[in-house]
Length: 127
Image (cartoon, rainbow, N blue to C red):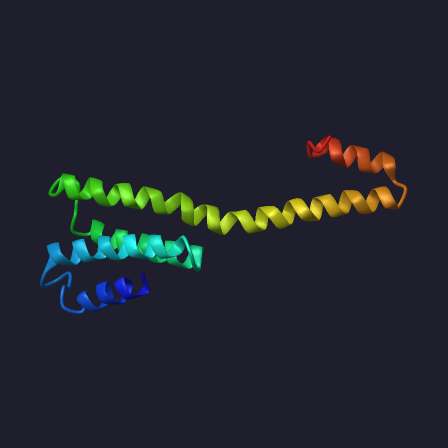
């Protein structure tokens, strides 16, 4: 997949927005798809962000009023990348917050503060 990414990036040196806008947009969409596929196996958040950036570049040309079918195609790919990127960025902090809360409750139980612990569990829906 990295070979495809490199090929699309190389093509964009010739297929510029100014000189070849239609080709530029198509290559950007393909680049976005390549980054999205790459995100499934490596550097999820980073590659998803690169996919989103590529799709945004494609939207500069594939405007809904001028190219409705192509706009819809890019929009479909874009919508797949957005939640994937969001999920990649938010899942880890949420896990560590939950782990921290668990450890706090566990520590309070060990300290013999069962009343405070029970209140904490009720407040966070753990019981």
